[in-house]
Image (cartoon, rainbow, N blue to C red; front, side):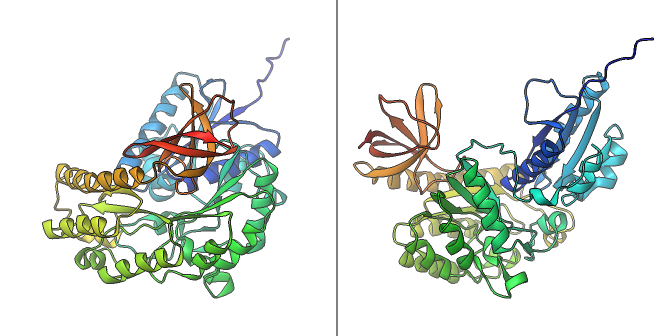
Length: 436
């Protein structure tokens, strides 16, 4: 009697949400690969039989996308195109019991910190010696580097502590070892990420230790750009700016989510700062690092936001002229302290306010870009698209910020650095020619 040949499992990992989720997926990929399991990330070949969906549960739109993605994979399973569907990440952490009832076709659900349990589904062991080993889902010349997990802040709108727990820093030695591993894989630029970057080290070193970490990282041979993301403004450790100014491979770039500017909103959001403190902090940062690019995110439509609050936010943007701004509309999240407030602003009005605020920033961005015409910048080449090379200056992070359209007759390689003389400027992008 002939026996049916068993096809080897192949796993496809689908990642939704933020860069922190992406790192988790890359670590899972590395562990599966080390256990001899065939794994891909966001594969479009449809030659896999197992899917792991790493979900986001941050705001309504993200939750909706996560649920829809799960349902799409379950439908493929029903049609016999998948054997197993596993779900992990923030949505699973937050709503696991409800989702298990509503979508029983899913084979197993996992929280944000249950990597060893996921591996058990594949009869694989968590290999501690692989700490820092990842299969990158980004282009090989840049990577995200997570320096801590969780958050101790109590912002009234945010559900992240419910899904990620309290703040836990990695040691300086662990982060440096991971950075060295990434460089050995061809990475030129790392983007430091955490739920709250400036809190780094308080739990293990009993002090804010981001400046110390930056010194050690900047000494890693071959690491050409280090970029800071998600730096909380309250009690901001200004000593990190001294290191930024001294070290050439730390980008003059800071992602600092402010969320709002009016005292009314800052208090309601439990941001632990007042209006004038934020104005003063931005001025202090620019004083320490002249020319630094400051990126921020804002929230429109928080409960109780008035017309005056919106006008104050627009005036703030005109006063301080931030380099980069992203904006979210408020999402009413269960089990946050803001959930007790009445979500009294219509979705259409939230969107209108967000658009109104971004129109102010769009003009600022255009004017700031126009000032760059005639200047020459060091640019990292990211990709070739539609016959043109695209890259970024040190003042721009991946996906969220400006790109530079690079004009050249010579072939360029992703990860290569070139000097670009800016000849044109648009609302959010620059264009220029490669110069020697």
